Image (tube, rainbow over all chains, first blue to last red; front, side, top):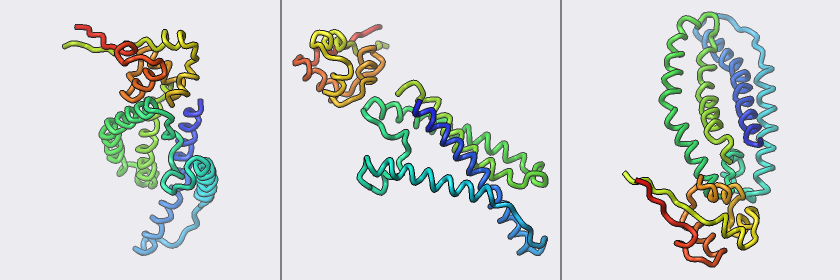
Length: 154
Length: 71
């Protein structure tokens, strides 16, 4: 049950990150266009970015507090994902198998992203932030494969 | 090719020593789920864990764990 929540929170955070970073990407594109002299300044909505940053600070703070109790403030372990707090050798083995599976699926995910990237010229005018969205497929797919591999095993 | 399976008497010995899975797990420093997985044959323990389990039951390795060969 706990793992299920960790998975959903991770996916939710990544979706929020995609939502929050699209305005930044659009802003960078506008700045590039202004520098090139192709357009004048334009207002953009950065509310999603601010919401995302606030949620990140909140989650980071919670992780820090949770891990600080366990690891006595060892800097590297303070932001350790909850999935990797194995309690014995069997749990370490389950994690190792899941990570292996994620690694094996990497070329497939990469291939799908490359294929989807090929559609960008057709979507560039209507959806300029399309590459930014594709970028987030990678971690979401990795987390999903990991979760499907470890669920019901811990 | 011969398939080798590790069989064990952990469940039987645990009952003889009147230990719960949780108690045995605590004695050998693993989770209860790991003891359950070993008993069911779903998980092959490391040499260190197997030796620790043998130590709890005061038995040599071959009387607790043994290989089952299936051709």
